[in-house]
Length: 276
Ligand SMILES: [Zn+2]
Ligand SMILES: [Zn+2]
Picture 1 (tube, helix red, strand yellow):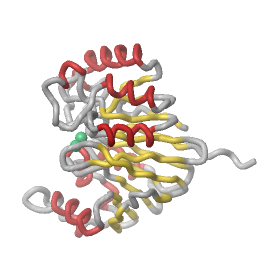
Picture 2 (cartoon, helix red, strand yellow):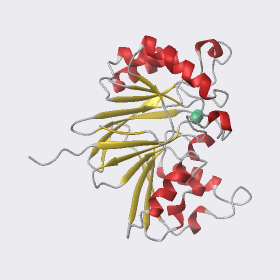
Picture 3 (cartoon, helix red, strand yellow):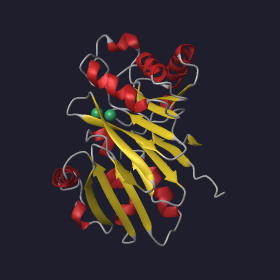
Picture 4 (cartoon, rainbow, N blue to C red):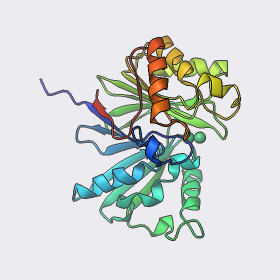
């Protein structure tokens, strides 16, 4: 029997909206959204390019590989999901092949990413980097990537966002960040895509009390996270996209409250790693 390949997941950025590297937030981490998935010897897969992507890039470079190959899947293009890309060190290596994926057309994806990497916003333009870059449109109906089945699904968010269900023969990871609950059709779809996941990463930016004054801002709550997790019978829930104002003490209280509703809950934490 060949040894089972496992998906090894590492969280590099767990914060929403803006990096908050202030001392009181560093227990959980101050970097914005970035998650890596390593599946056997397949190319590294990355979900979102928030500021957490910088440290991942440094780790990749430090491995000293003859050839670097990566797939970066983007949920949407708000700053906290792309701001790490210009600081991703492998972009400046000629031995790096980097593929960007999103639900947008290839031309639109290329245009969006090139817009943020040009003067006066950034001194190096995207076409001038040494890495070999490709832009790919994700098939909404699902596609195969590096031995994994990827199924994008729609979320409710200003300017739109898509989550991803990622399946190996043995495990399911669901990444659903930047989503506001409340639209019945999208919420039902989310529950279908999250069904039975080994790990559900979910936008829990607000407390239910905070949410009363944040309708329409595009984010959900820890309480709604526990409801989705229970309805979809997931095995583990990770509260994600922490509000910049939620310091370590606040997140400790949030995860404690969430565990009373859904015991298998963690609050996402930078450099947390697990395999499935
Ligand atoms: Zn965000
Ligand atoms: Zn967003």
